[in-house]
Image: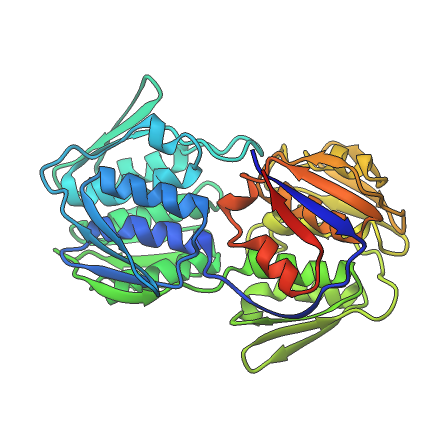
Length: 417
């Protein structure tokens, strides 16, 4: 069991390069199952979830080769059972993304109900309803979902609520369906537009990705392609919040300011200097932080995946701030650990009230999920004394070499077993 030892307080200063987005790379890897040829994916982050997805694709018959720039994948599993077993998918919710591609390409898929971070109920009922609308037969039995269809047929389907993985799954299923599919009330995250860009490069005909209405004209086959994954807006946002929290100055390279607009607008309200550069974003914090409320919501709202990190920032801001979590019902698990470090936080249902400018002191804290881990690391950078963050295997699911990037920015952080 590995842990981070952080000696604080630290001031982050310097340059850091954004990694590829885990949440864009995972559906891109799953999409390779649709190809009749080799897909080259560049800027794929070397994190735990990516390794898990690669093992799953190999189990499904794909050849996966890691190169200096990313991964090369050739799906050779035609005729093999399309089953994703519990042993491979229990730690990663994104494993459900193979459902659509397997159904579209092989006519059948059997996938264990997904695991991942315990941040709330995340059902896949809308995935299944959408696949049924395309003509699939769906069965749930013994913890597995099984779908079958000789030929998917284009249809109109409206999501009850926007769902990122649901939108991605139906997008991948519909590209090989006969006729035209129209998806409405879709999730609008940048990662969905990135998946559509890959699929179009493979020969799909998709328009509207990144908006709430997507139209897919089915094709008979998809070929190989080369694709560069977009920057990870959550990873990048974490380092920008770290700079603000520690009174630092950080230049985030290879990042898209448009994808981080909700955070950048909020940081400006907090009194942080934010500027766009030719190749990224620069933030500088020289004065006192101002407390500002935030409400999480699907893109283009404030991302739930930056809520925990923002709460760490508000512990050091002048005044009182409230954080309202509307996406997941169990995403305040980091709060008791922050309070162990001296934070003054009160929780009322889905609203947390944070009293700012409370000194933080180093402590032993336990990471409970991916983003909670990042929150505790940031708090450790601002705290007086040593902070030990346990169970950082959660962190390794989504952050590529975090301790190395923080060290390059001047932080005193060390990984130990």
